[in-house]
Image (cartoon, rainbow, N blue to C red; front, side, top):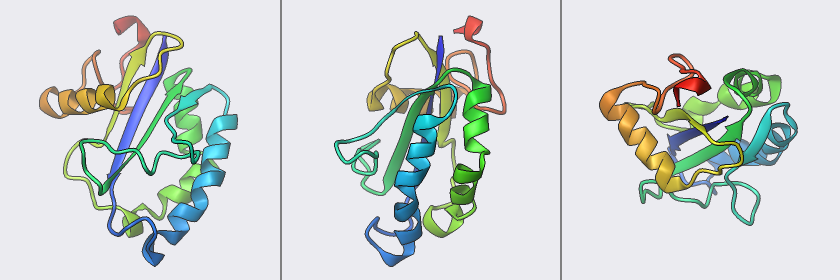
Length: 147
């Protein structure tokens, strides 16, 4: 089994605005670090090499990040590593404060690459029912044997 994750954020301004320039400028570097990270398996991306043009919940103000990892530990190592952490520090300048779950994790068979529709279903399930073996958070994770 491998760990799928989705993280969505609501933009405070258009991607081409001066307010989001620092975020957009960091995307290629942060994605390259993810691609080379131990335990990384796959990330959602368009022909442009990122996922900023991919819609989730049919909402033009939401951006989506979705990836597959070997384990929660390898995902955490990347999320709290220097390159990604530097982008996390700026999130309040770029994204609305979330009012509901915006991140979800779930186990997938090795080689499975989740769709946006699958990510939507997992987020909605987490929001409605809380963490379980079907979908969870890094704070309340479930082992792959629970899948």
